[in-house]
Image (tube, rainbow over all chains, first blue to last red; front, side, top):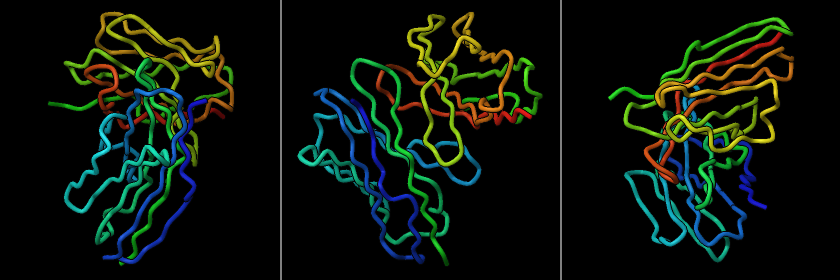
Length: 114
Length: 113
């Protein structure tokens, strides 16, 4: 079965703290793609990153970084020096190589307080 | 380049009525997707099109639901004989190709009374 688990339902931090959002996925396929999306209070899903199963290099983009570990089937997302504008629901998603649909986790609500 | 647009943004209807939503994808994208999101959940896949061909439908898509993309550009999602359980946010997305990032529209929030 294909599944994405985001065990953290809600996380609250104070501005400037670092925060890591966990994502664990399940698939038997060898070719797959992983994504992170942000859903701010306005509601529109915003694409953050796409990673394929053959590329385990970690990625950094400004204050955002992603750690992909196939050995633990995890694709975790870290925000460094969080800001109030980072407050949103973050979704991890899985796409298998032989289909177009995205399988989403249940999301993690991040609240950053000033 | 404009993003994905959806109309209407909100729809309130009475149980048993039919509703239709429209999605306009990013112009050069040949793939178009429909998802449904309920409160506190992630989006759930409903169906997708490659150009005008509907290639996959979820089991969630009962026979009251129908989607079309007649000329490979915009798409419509129709729900017949709406039920209260159909209340949700209906999201449309488009992408350039398989496994590429999907860009989402703002959604249509449906409330069935």
